[in-house]
Amino acid sequence: MDTHKILILGVGSIGERHLRCFKATKRADLSFCETNEKLRKTIADRYEVSGCYNTLEEALNDRSKTFDIAVIATPSPLHIPMATQLVQAGINIFIEKPLSTSLDGIQELINLIKKQQVIAAVAYTYRSHPALRSMKQAIDEGRFGKPVQVVSVWGQHFPKYRPAYREIYYTSRATGGGAIQDVMTHAINAGEFLAGPIDRLMADAAHQVLEGVEVEDTVHVIARHGDILGCYSLNQHQAPNENTITVICERGTAKFDLNNACWSSMTEPGGEWQKEFTFSLERDDIFIAQANLFLDVVEGKAEPACTVAEGLQSLRVNLAMLDAADHPNWRLVNPNK
Ligand SMILES: NC(=O)c1ccc[n+]([C@@H]2O[C@H](COP(=O)([O-])OP(=O)(O)OC[C@H]3O[C@@H](n4cnc5c(N)ncnc54)[C@H](O)[C@@H]3O)[C@@H](O)[C@H]2O)c1
Image (cartoon, rainbow, N blue to C red):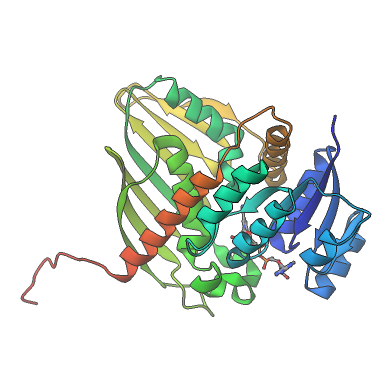
């Protein structure tokens, strides 16, 4: 088995997880870059790594190392400039979501990826989730007939799971923050995986509960994936962990349940859910599955779960959601009031 020389860029919350989970594949030799000195020392002490750098330039100038993969886990405005620099150096890239906060430089990056013949993919994690992949396969095989509707219901208590939310990129849309760019994008990207690209939408969003920030924490979107109707709701403050995506087809319904790591189906009206596939509940296992799949792609054994073009499509949806939520076109129920 190949040992890949991997450079992780940014070892904050998700970068550390990538480091740990790529290591767990036993197919990788890990190095990382981190500008925060205290964190750099902590991570270097916590894991066995073969290189530890302050900046990307420092890593690329290390003549003793040739990296074949970089995982970009810095805040999203840095993704495209870093990806461009890495692809110019001939390095395969795995880019965290969202691809960016604007369309700047993305077409140029796609052209460069083609020219340099490197592998590139976007880390929309749920596309690598074995249960979601299994559900997609069943839908694509036509087991339930044609999909007609997608209903996605997501909610989680963000302060419990990300207590540092007031101190990171999350606080501002410009740095990739707010519920739309940070979390709704996962649901949308998974919905597009199952039902194809969204081509139009309407959105409503507001800051309702989260203390210490002003960005939206509650979002509703209705969308069209071609002729498939979609409806996506999300909040970041409810007590229950709820993350389901239901695809209603002409002859049956398929439901992905992230928190129970499974998908189920129902074809009998008023029947029982039939459990179709269950994965591990250990959160790292999804990221280890994602890492193994990406390494398979680099080795030519699999297709990317989310290409840069598909990441760009989901970014266009992010930008459309932000614009729609900021410029609502309400029909007043009682115009005289
Ligand atoms: N796939 C997922 O489930 C998931 C989960 C969380 C975050 N994310 C995405 O991952 C990215 C990072 O999120 P996070 O929560 O880890 O943020 P974070 O703030 O915890 O970590 C980002 C790290 O990047 C470092 N950094 C910033 N500029 C750098 C530079 N020029 N060179 C090297 N290091 C630099 C920061 O010091 C910080 O430690 C975001 O795009 C976010 O949307 C994805």
